[in-house]
Image (cartoon, rainbow, N blue to C red; front, side, top):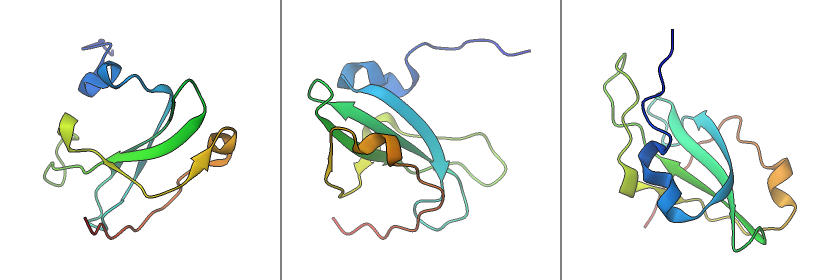
Length: 95
């Protein structure tokens, strides 16, 4: 049986994003599933892809820090989000 713990996971409602499409992919190559969200903002005019690295130890439940998300450097416009699906990803983040 499943029980709802929260209706605002990671406090995402505060960001004002819409049309959230969660996915899991190993973004940093550590063989752990990270959280990836494709979302729209600016009244649906722009789309971007954000991700949170999974900081849990292998075999433990997911662990994501709400404020630690990063945005993939993509330039997506209205309508692009429908075709934005991340099956696998290897990203080297260079701040």
